Length: 279
Image 1 (cartoon, rainbow, N blue to C red):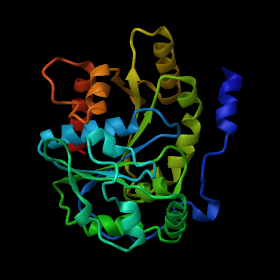
Image 2: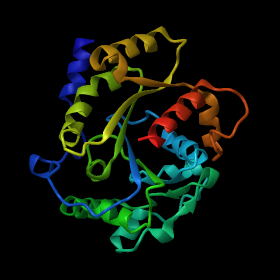
Image 3: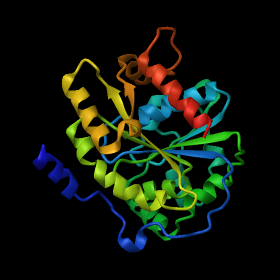
């Protein structure tokens, strides 16, 4: 285990900003909505799936929810059953277009803003722009006409990248998503270092750490959860149980919470929604 942890702690994160590009004090345009940012060091932890489910859950609790994809992989449209060529914020930003015309219907009355299809050159151009303009995301959110009753859920790319830092600049709540495995545990310290400058601010965002898709029938997974708790403390970690029905629903572009059968995962997501609604 020691060698495994050392490997992940020594592995540099992708597209990491230099010290000069780390968070610096800046006056952000006002965004009246609550902003929830989902983050992870590792890919494949179910971050987009959770963003989709949270959008449905919070909307059911009376919030007006917008799910925003900041990931150039442009995978969120699959979860909502939207066309792959749906217009997105990537190309619109390069053309200096507003985002309000890009909003599409999500589950249970929520709204969706996908990243949209972009080629490598467009992605490189946008990343260069974002490094020079830390207020890019804040400005676009401020122009969406959101109120205090709105919640924006932002799905960021895995790792240390410019999209993550744009989102953290405006975050009111950060949800760290991991799996009960050695890769996520090994990357925990990296995530803590990454978030530290933002959590040290006077108006620091709240931070929740979740192990997603927990299989309680797996002794290994339960052991990994214990190791997480040793690092974070008993109250520093929460779990969302594994539920294949959620994955099946999203595979067909269906609302993962619109089902009659009881589910521990759905209960976990509803609890998280209640916490976010009360934030």
